[in-house]
Length: 119
Image (cartoon, rainbow, N blue to C red):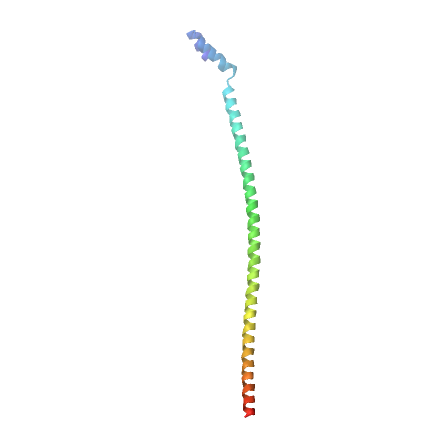
């Protein structure tokens, strides 16, 4: 089409444009495809790097969560043990307080008997 118009108009510029288009009609398309492939490769690399970072963070967070969960379980067990110990010691204190009262009463009785026997 351009070559016909160049001949009809005797246009040297149109003839040169016609030759350039005929020589490499898909050059621009090829360049666009190469640019697109390059861009997709860059995006793929960026996504791979981001996925690696995410995987690292997930692993780190999982390990941290597991450690914290284990610590909570240990502290909960320790709390339960100490609560049981407190209950046992409280009972021991009550028992010993009762024994002291009994001893005080027995001592008071013994003292009063001695006092009565001296008279």
